[in-house]
Each structure stands twice: as C-alpha cells, then as structure tokens.
Picture (cartoon, rainbow, N blue to C red):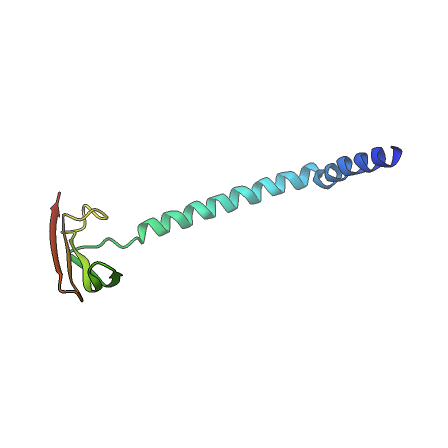
Length: 118
C-alpha cells in the first residue's frame, strides 16, 4: 500500500516540477508566442493577396470507363466548361456547361448536356 501511495505521489508531483518556470522565462516565452502569431498572420495575409483569381473560360474533362451486367462496358468522356467573366464572382462561375458522351458495348449510347448560369 505504501509503495502505491509513494508511486502515486511521485507521478503527480513530477509533471508539476516540469512545468514550473521562472517568471522571466515565462515573459520571454509570451513574447515569442506573440511574435510567432504575428508572423503567421502576416503570412496568411500575403497568401490571400497572392490567390489566383480565374478569369474567362476554364475546362475540365475526364475519361469514363465502367461495367454493368445490363449494358456492358461503358467508355467515353465527361466534364465541365466554366466561364468566370472578369473574375468578380470567382470561385462561382457565371456560366457552367456540363457534358457526358459515352457508349456501352451492348449498343446503348448516352449523350448528356446541361447548362447553368447565375
């Protein structure tokens, strides 16, 4: 019983002795923390200024390849075309055109076109 009591006391007091610091060291650490926070804020502000704003047209297309027991293998492409205008509405596009063109080996063909605007 005494061994557990002694071990428990040592376990509780040891972390306290590690966290004890001189007041001058604490003030220096606070200054370092404030400087680090200021540097991080400045870096974030610089990144926001350097963000790329897309203007005009943007295009993205991907191949599609799937299999279904009902219609066989599918092969084709799908994607989107975006128009951002002069970039005032970025990241929301002014116009968006979505498309898919694909064919299945059992004869079915899929052609899809959709348009969306603000």
